[in-house]
Image (tube, rainbow, N blue to C red):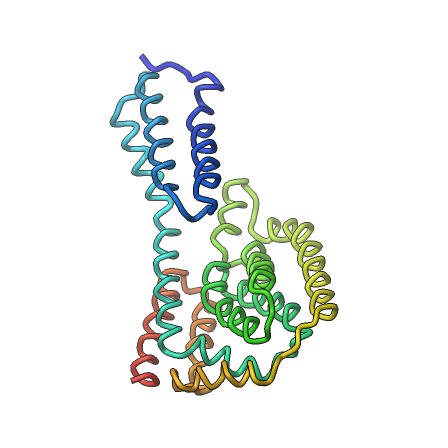
Length: 278
């Protein structure tokens, strides 16, 4: 006979998961190191045992597992494709070309401000913070490193812009999912999201602008030329490589779904790698 779980029993798998993940950080001193997967599996197993003890049939548990995994599958596929996209854009020279030409046109004092704005624009256009960070974000990080800036600060600027676009873009999956679950329309949801995202973005822009002008970040000519020479020695750079991100943005603006869009960007990166980096 099926029984209702008490609040403590219902929260037990979550509490165990938090304890295991926290212990993992203290033991290995890194959230990405250690046995995070083991912690997740043990917590899931505990949840399954509790469900069986409460009288829930195994078939129902299995059906729910399949349903939950199925709902997460689009995000998993997007993550896989983003990895492929970043890889082909790197070997084709698209990302190195962004770094190469970006070093010539970006003012070091305005770089962090520019990184936020560019990341926000690309993320709004694509509807994905992940793909923004994996493509233009990698290029901006390379430029920032060549300009002698802290990688952590540059990453913060990129993520600030990328997450803004992900929250307000009509193409974003989470932006579409939230109003659907709440029973409202998309653009009403976006309008109310502006109440928190616009002040947050404005504050981030001010902070990064202050950091840019108050810091001693100056583009050392020797450092910049060394980076450009290294890119020249490894890749065949050409403005034609910018056709790849331009075509991808066009595909996304035409409202092609994320999976085929990212697949097209990956294939284009592979084709351009064969053409430009034989």
